[in-house]
Length: 534
Image (cartoon, rainbow, N blue to C red; front, side, top):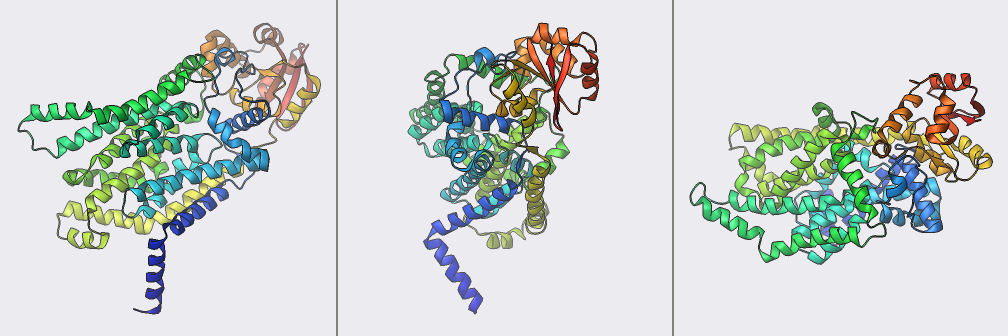
């Protein structure tokens, strides 16, 4: 053994004896990556301003129970802070480090903790080559982009995968508690139920796959039925379902939260009126080719492992089957709305990890490769394809995706956006004045800088559409410059507005307002024009 082999052997033994060093190394690397992504002083999503403002409001005055800032939406009467615990957890960071640095640091910490949590999950389950799968996850550009936004994405994923781990290990009390916490933290808590159902289905499929078909079909189906409804499974499923229900009922927003959930989960998340209202880009579908590009190496490996999964079907267990089911589930939703790529990325990588471990069994990759050379041509080609991707393309794609995600922030939204017009309103408007704005997604920036006044619409246009469809259409027609006459009177009569904030990209609307004697321009900067109604 030469000098370098000796050093490598000692390093391996040190890591094996003290796993903490390895965990610390993973945390440090991942945290550095997310700090680099967050380095630019901008946000990529307007909602970041809303979350930052809510953190500030809660730190100063306690929970926000009512939300009068959106006067012409259902939130005026049915607001709940569906991210309450996410906002509470962010308070120390914002208070200690300031708004911009604190919120970005909070976002980087959450993203890092999720990746570290995934690594611990895989290591605890003795998944082979866990480090490689974590690197593959970091190369999913769509996932990397979504988890880097100043939103509750990472907070939700941490809770979801903690619940999945509790499902796997039958930790029912922890599952009950985490399901409850999930309801208070993020609107996607219904996924806990979906995971519980898919896990029961995976356990049933594992039994059926390992049975001899087609002999004695009926007894096998009876066995599956008895397994699903066994006391052990009922306790686990019951923990997930009861935790969510109690989280909804024992809640500072009950019973308003029931109405809000219908609006948020069903009408926005599932029905999604993107044909009727101008919703955010995250709600529009992926094209299949674009999805492959945004999921990166994991999508290519996923195709290969999907085929190998069925070649080695008898080797698979309930965990690999579960992650196959969740991957299919989130693929369908991601093809409907881009935002679900934040769930697809980690579930696909976990499918790769568990399916690979099942296929390798007790073999390491070297011994498996030696055996594989004697197998059929299809299997041999698939493994070679996987090795080429991992060894050659993977490092290049990973570095490119991290750099590209960081570069997105270069053209992001400045913290000072709309600060000038907001300062003018703070100095000159009356408390509770209604401000008309040209875009629903301008609201978070205006709200962040000025919570003294109220606004027309924000967070999602569906909230205004469900409040009054005719009013929403009038708002859209006015702000898109489809109405050119009697504008001041219509804005006064229908929206009770005292001021009108107009984006600098609405030249035609600005011309209409200048020509209307009912408007007086009182302020202008690089962000917007501000008109006062006479």
